[in-house]
Image (cartoon, rainbow, N blue to C red; front, side, top):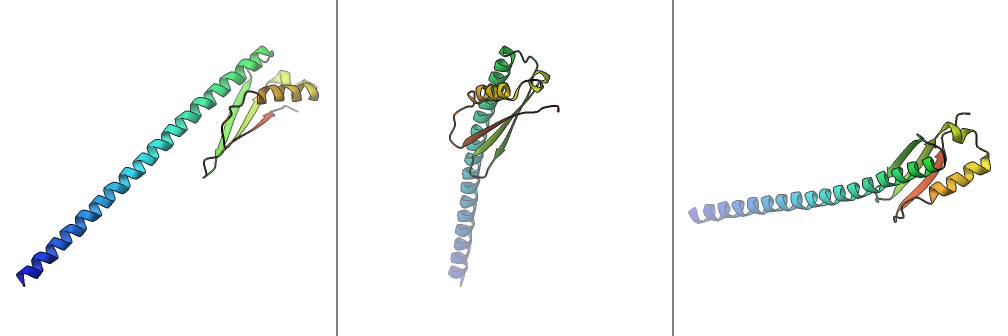
Length: 127
């Protein structure tokens, strides 16, 4: 009888240790995944800041100092990203449609090339 109780205790301790090991393994994997996601997010934030800086520089060279530049993004579950670049300046409001289209094309040339990233550009016009 005593031998059965000893075996049951040994089995219970073994099961408990296996469960604890599995728990720690799961926590380690999740933390590595979160660290990788954080690294990816920092990478894209750096790219976004640089893009915004380049857009502002281009706009200033074109005579649109102090333009409002907004970069918004939607990140899908699969990691793909859809960006919208919105630019506002009163000088753009008065431009001809063809001039605005040409400016949009120049802005689009600044987009960063990353797989899974799409860009849309628009002007916020006071009409």
